[in-house]
Image 1 (cartoon, rainbow, N blue to C red):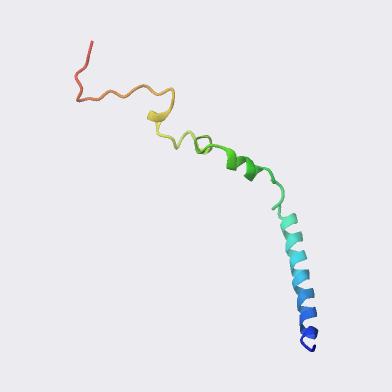
Image 2 (image 1 turned 120 degrees about the vertical axis):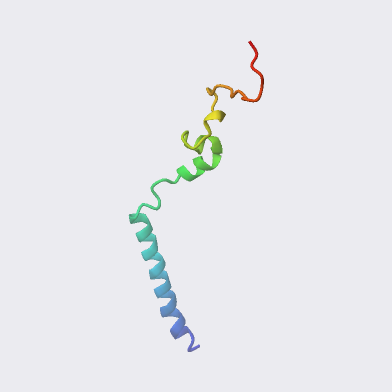
Length: 74
């Protein structure tokens, strides 16, 4: 029964710490974009990549490469 005298203040301190963390998260903007992560999860990786990081030969408007070892046809 004497243990409860230590547990009650401990639980009150733990509860106050949880409330303080909740307020800190709300003030620092942790809950500003609730739908963004869900939308990014559904996007294809191709849409997420920057166009600069994509190999230029893989773009739809790229001209086909010619092999220098292949004889040219006229």
